[in-house]
Image (cartoon, rainbow, N blue to C red):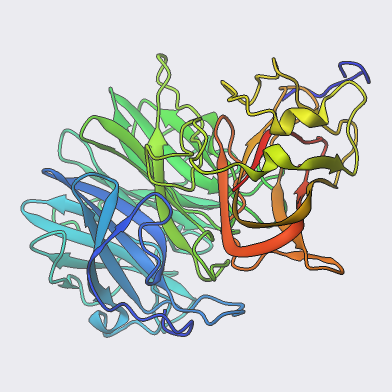
Length: 472
């Protein structure tokens, strides 16, 4: 986005949660809160969408991944998902030592092959194994008895993780994988458990970090993947970029960012069409008690441009199509209407009062009713509501302002409340969304307070702005 040049224009047992039933949980925020899930792979079979996910079991405050098995979730409407339970674990691989990381299931000849990266106990660190089952729910068994890909594989990636498998119209299957900027690809033999030819280094995959996802649409091949360059994310975080090609082995042409960074440092895309609608499936840290090692799978609708490029996905925090998603405000009494607004800084030509005028924007660029903006300040600024008497607040909804110049979507945000003597973070805050063209809903344990504050941290080189900030 362009900068404004003049002043006037200018990333669960240990947590104590136990999965007691396989009942449905609402999406897209998140598919379940009974356990922490990550690294989704999406598969459509008939009228059912299956999500094969990792399982985060790190303790609260943990600083490393604890992952020992994989779950399968199913849905017939992409809105409510049922946890079908653990369908694959490290114990299924006699040669595995740990780290049940991001995998993907690919059908072939009535069988379902689950490609997963695990610590293989041998030389090096991560290997890629294959399990096979008779249905998307298994039962799955080790199909090979050892790694499909390891450090001993010629031209393997610096870190052999995150396999994605794609079968073309002619029946030829391909596997992409890798990390540490080392994307790799190879053909698979018809048995789906052996490589067919050399491992190549695909060309044109700009800023690749990890988590590739490959698919085909209207004769064009697409490769989405996690990137963590400064052009799309804050340090230590990832966005999702994508590239296209006319051949499944490349070369690839970078097309842009399809998903901005989320509340967890890592991310992993799965893009799938289901009942005529395309979806981006990914993970974040939005579930209660979540974090970089306690992630949660969610999904949002994905839309296409006429030229075959993907529109950037709008991250929502409520059910798909529900209140607060897709540009409509959430229901409830907006306590902001009775508050006095203040801020650490507002540009002289902007309007702080616009954040509580009740106008429903048509997009993040719609400042026809005024907007709050803090150009040319960078870093963290705040906006605040104050009431003469205490109000009970448990949710805020923020519609960000982006003028396609110097004001851009923020890198992060944090809701705080006045406890009588100081500002403190609200308890149990869900992820503070920074999506464009929608109300980003943040929930938390109800607080009774006379003051509510939103701390807004900008992306490097930009300032931030708000069109509407609701307190409910």
